[in-house]
Length: 312
Ligand code: NDP
Image 1 (cartoon, rainbow, N blue to C red):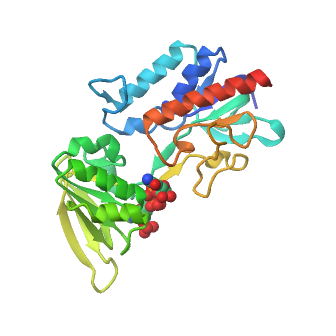
Image 2: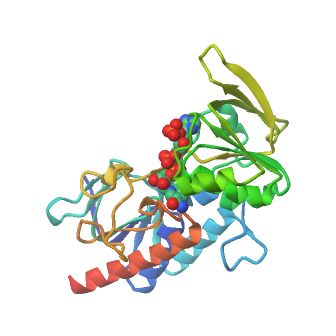
Image 3: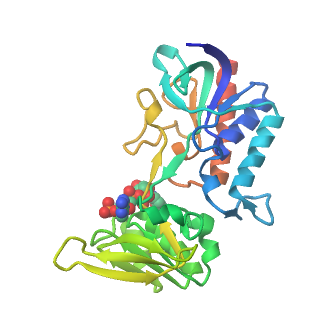
């Protein structure tokens, strides 16, 4: 297989990857960035972004990522299509296979592969994505001011998103499949003490409906039991909060992750357990998951990689 030698290989094209590329380019490290399956990352699935500083009038997610890309490219980053299919980080190696057909031998690797929100898998979810279906209340909640919305899930994220939305929206339904919330007690208390949140325990979503945009959801209570009952709610927004998958599987034979697959980095650093391999953005951040935080961590990873290369 053809092997190419590069100084810095950045894997992923969200805010973390592009920011790492901007910094590594300016440090004369000639970074190569491999975009992955979803060029631009998760932000390309949101509509307008209003909380990224520097865009006083808001910006479309896809457009913002295109601007990140252009900035990285103008500074010298070599941005390529391709997906990492295999890595070999054994015995000091940093070999990365792209699309099963090309091998890159990198002096330093920056993993910025992000995370993917989980969806229920309903055909209507796909149909209304961006038109009432969202996996990020912080990103899209503002567009549902004074409206009725639903949040699916019973974990900390769902509770946090529901209370966030409750400040903006008229009413928030939480659709919880069990008869209890999995969230921490503090988060549960917050939800219980918010009058415009109604928890629908033991409910599952069958389908969403609406003319071009979400107008409601068909739910089922105690599905598969004698008490099974169908129910319809009228909502304008349907927010998924059933967890994220960090995109770390391909690295896991070598790079340490926690039980959920988030890459573990040293405290206040982007260093992983593999020398010369750094991680930034949502693939190592289970807590904040914001574009601005990912961009900041991409900057740290590039600085860490630069220091590593200088000292090796
Ligand atoms: P969790 O995995 O904790 O919770 C996911 C929730 O979604 C559960 O209620 C689960 O139900 C439900 N769910 C999963 N799949 C489906 C499905 N197919 N249909 C319906 N419901 C489904 O994920 P979170 O994102 O909430 O949290 C991830 C981690 O991050 C946790 O460790 C959490 O504590 C942490 N976190 C902490 C925060 C904080 O401290 N401020 C904020 C946000 C997250 P079930 O219970 O039935 O499995």
